[in-house]
Image (cartoon, rainbow, N blue to C red; front, side, top):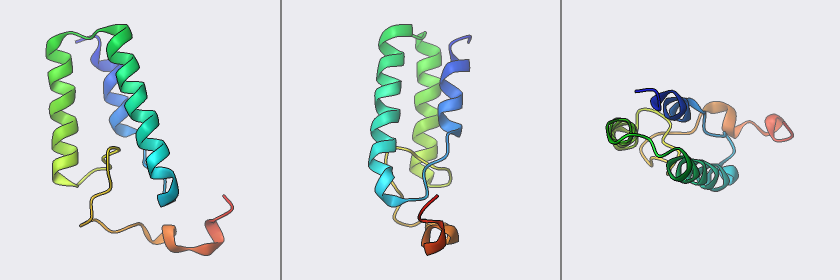
Amino acid sequence: MYCLQWLLPVLLIPKPLNPALWFNHSMFMGFYLLSFLLERKPCTICALVFLAALFLICYSCWGNCFLYHCHDSSLPDSAHDPSIVGT
């Protein structure tokens, strides 16, 4: 499972606090995964393990799914703080 060392850190990249950047972040992550799958061609077991982990994270809305924002989960308090806008 050597190829999982390049896929699992993708799940740990935090989603930006600014909702305006969520689309850019999801597009970047999608293109990264697509280019990784086309270039490295991971084994079937690694791809299935990664897709299962991605499905569980996105389905449960517990983690930070980079594909979409779960409507049930609220934004962090710092997302509404106007003093952080410039950072």
